[in-house]
Length: 149
Image (cartoon, rainbow, N blue to C red; front, top):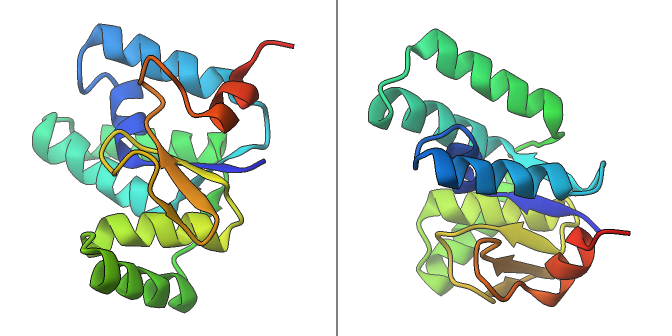
């Protein structure tokens, strides 16, 4: 099963929301089985912007962070099909175009889950279900994926 990671997961793992949330986010990404997690390219751009503008990080260090994430998890390219799907999502479900690009990319890559704290829990589109991995009660698919063997 494939899962896509939203920007907030990466931002928390970078320490943007404090040490406790950094540990929680890093624990989450480390527990994901190898080869299951993918990164929509949009998340890398958003992370760079967030690290520079909100966290005050030097652009060179922000660039290094997004390169590290890209090395850790394969990126999902933003194709014309992804953009058209995103436009449909933004039109039909009133998502921001940028959130819609992330969800559309996850769908194009065959992901079953999009891990996000920001989008509506349980929203499903073209086979991808949005779930907040920080909730006490985890989505059944995510709980199974994270279960220790």
